[in-house]
Length: 417
Image: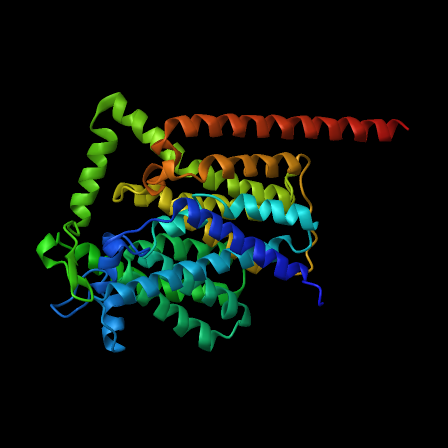
């Protein structure tokens, strides 16, 4: 009987993680299917049949290819392809980051990252979000086209990507452009990366500027009719204008005095807490955390900080803040996996075991159907869970401090000998 390779076992572990999260977080939506929520499904059905419409390119492409862009069955298939594709990208990124680590360390770190509402959980909770498809296309292009450094291919591909992503969902510029930017400025630092960034920026900036100038609120009556066989459904929400979204969010954040400011701080903390911990956990367990940091550690930390900061402007016009931080974490993991050499030796920090233990505790606490609206405010959706997670963070930090102190004492004793 042939022996199963370590890589195959790793992928089985990733599939198990996704299955576990689905059992806990999977939900039925329209027509009692395990498909996308009606809001996300409506995005796939929008097109240009009645003139130009914001986020209408995806439905237009489906129609041009001969598909029925209002078929919930077709939309569900497309949604699952995008979500499973991103899940596979995440598993592959963790494999490339951990394949030179010990098998148990690699498996535990990967489980701590993937069994989370901020990774696999957010893919299932926002199933059908066009941003998932955009991020999948970008990550695949960045992995297989960018390293070739062929400007004759890179420039048109990423220029077309800029058009596709901004016409499909304009918020994608806050994920793709920062990811390309850190590759050009911090990680790859070559002409090909700058060309990809410039091409994508040029085309997407034009489209987003036009959308900002021409966008108007659309009434629910303009929403397409979704169907499954003879059964039909119309989403009753409206696609609001940027001005209305901005004013609504500003009033929510700053129009209620101290209580509004407190709620805003709590929502931001709840949204960023898990992705921030997971990102730092991967950095600490894979690249280490020296004081002062090495050049490589500094580049990784700066890249992580920049992509996390890049999504903050979205909070001014959108409600589901945790969704943004979850997406950018997946993009970051794929980016550092792409730019880390295959023969790079891991250098975990002192207390890395404590970090992974904290990550596993966090996975157990947060992978729950009680956080069914995690995409909105993250852990703040359930303040008791958030407080428990803060305790886990505190204990993890204490373990790391003690591990560093123990290492310092051991080094001092060795020098005396």
